[in-house]
Image 1 (cartoon, rainbow over the protein chains, first blue to last red):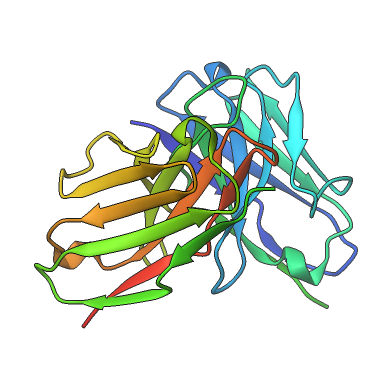
Image 2: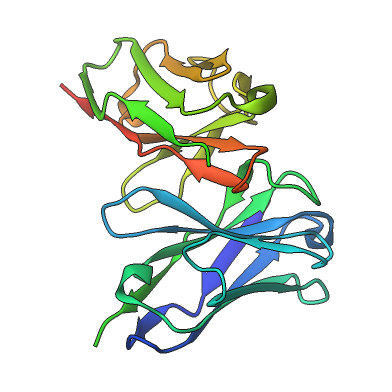
Amino acid sequence: QVQLVESGGGVVQPGGSLRLSCAASGFTFSHYGMHWVRQAPGKGLEWVAFIRYDGSNEYYADSVKGRFTISRDNSKNTLYLQMNSLRAEDTAVYYCAKDQMATTTTFFDYWGQGTLVTVSS
Amino acid sequence: EIVLTQSPGTLSLSPGERATLSCRASQSVSSSYLAWYQQKPGQAPRLLIYGASSRATGIPDRFSGSGSGTDFTLTISRLEPEDFAVYYCQQYGSSPPATFGGGTKVEIK
């Protein structure tokens, strides 16, 4: 069965950096686009970033553009999110999610359980 | 950017009742590229509906989606105890690539 397991969350000071990982199994990881979606405490869902199946293109929400970088290693079945210049408003649970397509953003058919990032001094 | 507005914010119903949730878009959603998700406390969202009306794998047939253009509806025909949760709509196929509505909480009356 499809499994997505996030790791790397924690507490970081404003202006700091963190790298999240998402280990995928149960499907052919290299065939699908992947996303990061976040949810601030008590709030709704916010799409963060998307990467195509082969890593050839990335797309970002305006709120994170220039600070966050999505990447993937298909040989390790792992998705990453490098987060720099973190702000208090980046505090959220970060989910990795699988797209049902390879090259375009559609809907999220599988989600990980999420990892909490807290930006606080 | 397409903004999705969900209503009502909270729906108070009893088990066995019918739930009707609305998702209205600020612009037409192309090709009915709209999905619905269910989220329970402490859990990740789960895909229910895609393409406005297609049920995802394993989703009971009491869940149905309808609509096109700017107005979409998720209907739960008879609420089961496990259906009390928050529901989100999401559009895809435009820029930015994905946006969510603010959610509707279905609570036990």
